[in-house]
Length: 175
Image (cartoon, rainbow, N blue to C red; front, side):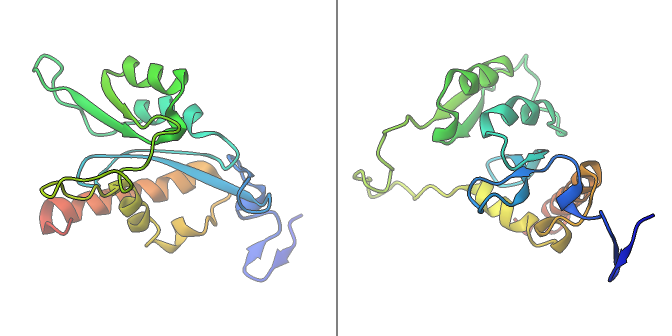
């Protein structure tokens, strides 16, 4: 029998749910990682949920498989580019991008950041749209703090928030 504590039943919440893991950057507390793929404008294309202790390269292939927006027709001469950070600079990351037909742009480990190199006057500063997408997703309190015990319920909340972001982009042009 579950014992009631406040408004939650004992055993509910993200502490005892599935797809959680010890977060190496947060004193070993249990947590969840969201792997998100976005387009150049910051609109979400794919979302995958895993434990916080799973490395990003292990989630790359699952994230690329989870794309819920159809890519352009492969018969046309459009190449799809994929920008990744230094964590994906390994054979696993490069192989996953090539399987799905993307041209990988992965910064090499040891390469200096763009801000330290001389930039031409007409070049704009590069903004990471994925960070902005993460902030938009965190605008929903149920996503920021995971209250759902089951990972599929948590993933459904994230996908619902992605649908709302697409709605705003298509009908209100707020991106």
